[in-house]
Image (cartoon, rainbow, N blue to C red; front, side):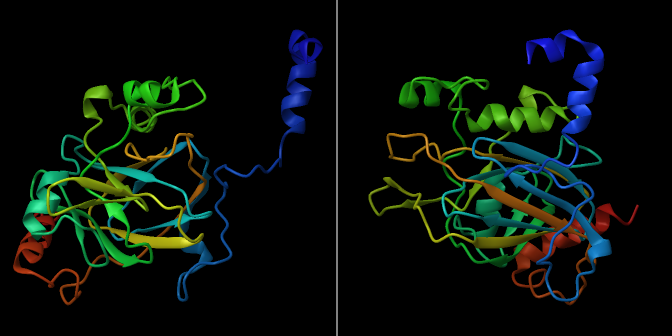
Length: 274
């Protein structure tokens, strides 16, 4: 390898010889997926990527696009942040997501709301039903305390720094890394106020589908849940697939499920009326 790197021509030939190499976790460009839902054309496929254990991914999605996440082996933890792609100072507000829906437990039909009272994304299918709006993600200090190393470049990367890497690809900075929701890993609040983590492992293949209600930037980090009680740093790959879809209609049942949710959708529609 040293000889290859010392010779620019050999280094070029080595790099070119890697073309077509497929590894377990990588984006597929152009995207290909053999399991799109019925009625979805391959021409509408936008994104296909397997996110490694400890990895991250990011994508800009348009209003109406769908994002499917699959916990391939039953031990993924998708820490999710969302930004208004046009104005990233508007972003997911976990407190308002909980408060406005009178419910802290996410599931099918629930909304992910911004700090401007608009719906960024809605959860239209949920085969996992184990999510967390309470705990946020890990950071370098929590991972160092638990695993002995929390550095972004170390063996036990943390969720916050992975989210920062994803946000930075859109010109955002550490101050823009806001509280996230965790998908596929849950947290239950007991009657006495204690938090019980629900981290599995679960059955492989659980999935969910999110619908973009605005033009959004999504950032996903796949690191162990911050309250995972296991001594070992444990997480498994996560698959992301996105495709084009129609904008939510006025008759949509998720849009009209509650007065508070309807108002949030109306705020979106007013935003796009400009």
